[in-house]
Image (cartoon, rainbow, N blue to C red; front, side, top):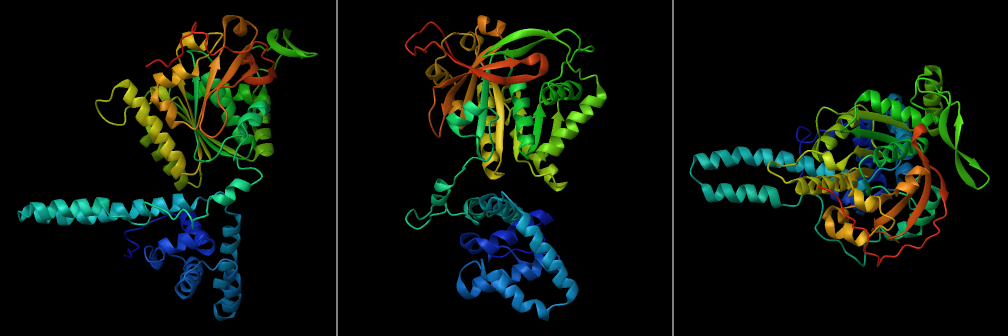
Amino acid sequence: MSYTSGALKFNNHFLNQIILHCIQNDDFIKKVRHTVPLDIFKTRDKKFLIEICFEFFDDFNAAPQDNFFDIFKEREKSIPSDLYDRCINLIGVLKDISGSNPEYILKTIDDAIRHFRLEEASVEFASLIKRGKYNDAKLLILKAIKDPVIEEPYYNFLEDRSFIHDRIKENRFDMSTGIDVLDATIGGYRNSWLVTVLGATKGGKTWFLIEMAVTAVFQGKRVLFISLEMGKEQIDERFDMTIGFMTSRMNGDNVEVMRKVGEDWIKSTENIDSIYNINKVVENRNRMRKIGGGDLRVVAFNRGRLNCFDVERIIDELEESGFYTDVVIVDYLGIMKETAAGQSKKERISENCIGLKDLSGRKNMIAISAMQGNRKAMTAEIFHSHLVADDIDTIFNSDLVLAFCQTKFEEEQNKYRLYIANYRHGKQHMQIGLVRDLEIGQVALDTYELKEKQDEDDKSAEAGVDY
């Protein structure tokens, strides 16, 4: 079934992605050919290019792929020069698109069609109810809800090889963690992942999330950082500290910081750049933009709470302005608001966790958040991951769970253990020793060797997550 342009309205970037996948992807064009109408492509250049794709598919039941440029070359003499120039410019734009997820595009089209169909059905539903045809009204709504639009509920295992080729890619990861030892252990982060950080109160969760945001920007990623507990002033200060290794003290004289001497890290009293040195702050921000090429948007929402649906709304609003999020970081999961009235605290956290995971998949991005950990567990010498897993089912909705563990002695030395509490895609129950210095906003200055082997049978420490 095809729909009119009034039913489906998408922005220019989204329409360009439809054209790109129709050129390249057999399965994609097969699903949209008789669903997406030509008249949603309002400009002549877009309509001309998509017509080439659709006509080729009608003849050969496949996407044109390399044949597209041959066909365009054949037709260039038959079109006006201004249209030719616009098509050339558009083809250049298509070539520059990277990271576009065809499944996300299909899902968005599917959602738009479902929305339109439910609107139409609701009008007819009201008419049937008015006429007393209750069974017909019920069947009408059920059909509108249940009927598949684009996506099929199954795939052909023997013929669908779309995921096999990803296995042999040299680098299957979309972002480095910024910690070499952690990269060597897990490889990095991938799009569609939900990464959850566990830590005790004041254990450094927010600092770690900020570090991830800065790391992503330095890798050219577009980052959305949402704080649910700090205002703009605090967020600004912390980001500037992390970016520039700066102190938040008004005067940067005689600040105790960590310095490496030989193989050891010791505390040293030094003069440090302060975030109140505005010229230095601006210089650091410009350096990050120039070196990394990424971008950062911050939502400071310390006077209220958001849920996963609000997060998606913010991302959609940013897309309308041309900002397409690669990494969304929510500080933090434990204080997100309920997704439905009457939820318990555990249900609220679980549903938002599931929502962020679903959002990361549909938007083809990395989602990162944090949760409050049981302080006794996070400060114990031995961390029992199986007790955490038994205590919280949201752990299983995360692709990667990292837990901060720090004894009082380690805290005095500015050291902590980063424990891989859960990892769906590889080894888990491993830990890495890290040196940090929150005086200058750094959570991973270096690694240190963990000398004592952890004893998983020692029941002296209880692990879990507070609700």
